[in-house]
Amino acid sequence: MLEITNLVKRYGQNDPVLKGLDLKVDGSSVVSIVGASGAGKSTLLRCINRLVEPTSGSIKLNGNELVNLRGSELRHSRRRIGMVFQGFNLIDRLTVMENVLSGRLGYVSFFQALTRRFPQADINRAFHLMERVGIAHYADKRADQLSGGERQRVAVVRALMQEPEILLADEPTASLDPKTSQQIMSLLQRLASEMSLPVLINIHNVTQARMYTDRIVGMRHGQMIFDGAPKDFNQDALDAIYGGIESPDEDNGEPDTADDHTQGALV
Image (tube, rainbow, N blue to C red; front, side):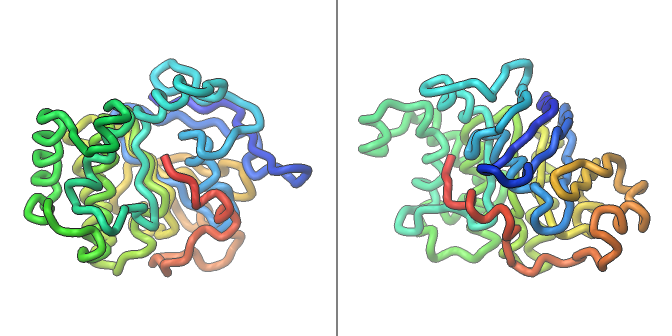
């Protein structure tokens, strides 16, 4: 279970980006976070995996506090948190298999990582997961030769190679066409069920949030103002979250601009 209590994130002397946020995610649920640009969605995900430092509050994963971890303890905790990025964050010159195996870097020695000599068990698991998402036949293909949807599937498998206790996805469909976006959302939904893995997705596309997630969390100005089932996400909730403006029903490929300053960090 992910349990967030009174989470605050402030940059400098500016108003807080996150304002005392509380959230629980457990089981194999798929939870979407929606809200206008600048609502704090990306910052929330990056606080969870400590790509940005929370100002105050508590973040617990299966009872283990993450906020105060440093050094090797922090590195070990990040192994338990899979992350899928909007921009894929693959190494283009490496093959699909090499990119996937990079998800095991936190588990092998420096020499093994440097020489890319991974245990056979890791290689077997990589093939198994790639078959599961339909990309095993691309194992020896360079990442820069893949389509956007194929690249995102590689990114999903790389995250799963960490054997995570939770999977975070930051706008995983924003760079994809509508059909491929639906395929990726369906894949995340299926994997959550099959692997009993909680998934937390930051997404602009309200229609996909309704279709592919079990629960919708709506944010505005760093606060949670809706938390419920997709069937309860009505026009009043939309107006409260988006301020009466038309909500986005299709991704436009643009990032959450207010959170862009944190996008360059890697797990």
